[in-house]
Every structure is written in structure tokens, then in C-alpha cells.
Image 1 (cartoon, rainbow, N blue to C red):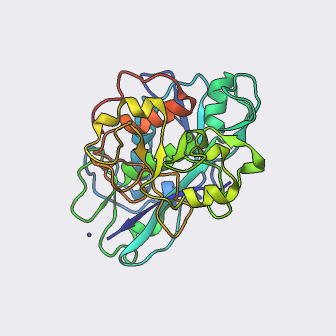
Image 2 (spheres, rainbow, N blue to C red; image 1 turned 90 degrees about the vertical axis):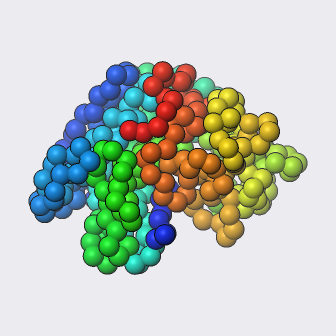
Length: 326
């Protein structure tokens, strides 16, 4: 399955399960895919920062990831543990640009008991929630990969991942928790399964995300009803590619830019097409959202992102949704 990436422009085998519980009914289990001495197990000394008291790079990464997973666990409600495979790998980049990470659901399901709509794909974690059972026992629900090169000397120059919990990275550094929130969000279902190059649906079926995408002014407007060619055109039709879910419309007033009068939310649809098209908010949104294509700090509102997941089937809004992170 395609994964979705988060990038920045400068201005995976040890298996270790780590449960992260929250005030809500959700448990997120982190599955460490890194070998001894690398990634989450890197013993390089670091100084504590921003409430993260760990003193090795691997432990600091792990603590920050657990913090991000805990934030997500407070926003969603599932009786089935959500298993997230995690690794830090060298993804490369340059002194001014790099992919920070990528992530997505490991599998999708349709026509299961509890599905909200027939002949429609749901990402693993959401399908498990709706079914009330693990539909693929023993397997992970999503995989997220982070660019270990960001912590090196060449990629992004002097910039590094900031592993503090306070959403206050030094100038030039990248708030890792924001990146983790972004990639886990894709794994929870903030992504369509449509091929952005061909416009084809996965095996010809709709997916829960696609159902809420509209090409404003087109006939037909909804991407579900379009031909493959019409979907290709819609995915490069910015600013006319919109999210039209009702939960998101109900909180659209939280934006000072990036929403229409009807409460539709502008989605990323720049040309030329890439794997990011249709699966991120447009860059025009104000305030920034951590599920835009390019990096935004974790000191951004959670409300709209959570509403999109509510639209695809994650259920009612939790009391802790409003406000900023952490």
C-alpha cells in the first residue's frame, strides 16, 4: 500500500511492543522494528529537552513517539488495540529539503461485520474499531518510518529533530512530535486509496476517505462517481478540491482561511501530481494544520484533523479535542 510522506523545506529487527494508554478507551501499541544500536535503540548521548528527560537518542525518540501516540489515543475511541510498527531509516535529503517521514495503514478491509458502508475500504485500525474485533490478529495496523538522516550533519544542515514535549523547538529544528502525529494520522485513515497518477480506485472500490472529496464545480462533483480521468483532473484542481464531510464543516469556523462559505475544507491538489495530492489539507489553511503536506509544529489545533477522522467513521468527538497541543 502507498504511504504518505511529510516533507520540510528549509526557512525497518528487534520487535518490542510498547502499549500507550490514555483517558479514552484506546490503546496504541508501538512495535519497534529497529535493530540494536539504531533508531529507537540508538545509544548516542543527548541532553534532556522540553520535558523529555531521556539521555540517549534512541530513548528520547521513543519517549517522544510515546507522547505523540498518547495524544492520538486521547482523540480516538476503540476497544481494539492499535498496533503501530515504527522504524528510523535513512531517507536522505539535501541541505534544504527532506522527507521527514512516511506512514500509512498496513492493510484495508471491506464488507466486514460492522462496516458503515458496503463495498468500501476501511483502514485496518478503523475497521477493527467498527468490527469490535481484530480483523487481522497478530499483524500491525500501520507502519510509520522516520528519516534518521535528519539527526545527522548533512540533511537539513544544522536542523535536527526536536524531541521535547513542549512544542517549542529551537529556531530551525523540526518538532518530531508534529511529524509523528502527522504519520500516525495517515495510518488511522487520513488518506485515500486512489492512485493519484491513474485515478483508479483500489480494486475498483470506494474508500472511506474518498467519499468526502469533491471537485467543486465539476459534474459529477464527488470523486466517488467520477471516471478515473476525472479523478486525475480533480486531484490537481486546487483550490477546488474540497473535503465536504459534515463533522469537518461543523468546525470550519475555526479556520480564518482555507474554508468555503459552505464549510468545505480546501485540500492539497497542486500540480504536478504527487502521492500527497488529495491526502493533505491545502497549504492555504490558517492556522496551519499538522496534516498539511509540509511541516507544521505540534502547536496547532487538533480539532479539524479529528473531525475529518470522525467523518470517515471514527465516531463522536471526544471532550479533549479542542485546543492546541500538547
